Length: 271
Image 1 (spheres, one colour):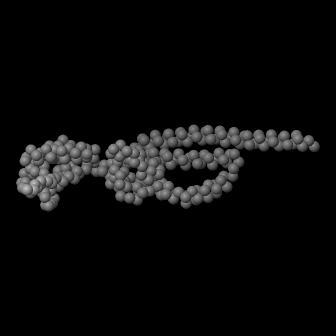
Image 2 (cartoon, one colour):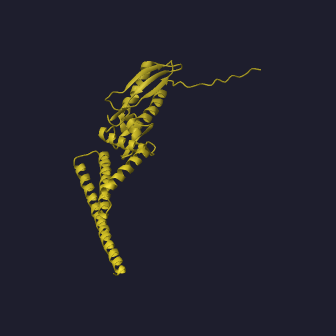
Image 3 (cartoon, rainbow, N blue to C red):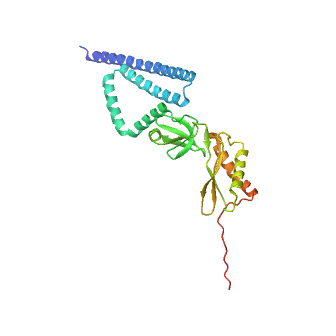
């Protein structure tokens, strides 16, 4: 018996067997990757036609893409010869270990799902949450990205975002600008209210519905404080805030109405 020939035949058989399996796995990976791209592309088109929310589209496509890739990896490993049942058990055990180690990340994932379900905000909304104020730029699986008012990128974990208070300034479409101005006690209240109201009604970005209001809010130690409440669209908030503040100062000066401020009295010693 020629042992050398037997070993050679055995190695050729093994090489042929595993070579075909590896070749099949490569083919499956290439075809599977192409199919996944087609599925994601088709899904995106269908969601666009049905007017799915942009943030929901990105979230679902991201989730679907990862799910399909995991399925493809399992199929490829099964083709090579790895027992998929054993692999599934290993994957489950690894998932449990990773889950325990990454509880925060899983909480963020769950938070992202809750945001997608209840939709407290969408891309483009101006929100205030977790002590940050900004426009929603992107809603991802684990985090939400905002663009701050100074053009900063703000990244907030979805877990804390979904469990905290969220103020959405865009939902209603309009915002009330809360301003307070103080005048001296010698000022005429009716005249002051007329001057302040004239400033509000003359500003091009102040809405007439709801109507702006001017009321005495406090009799402070050194001033009569007026609560000035104009309304505007969410996009015009800061234009109205700064514009009204400047215009009120000019209008009160023109009307001869004093804005109280601390005075320094110089005392000279006579000697």
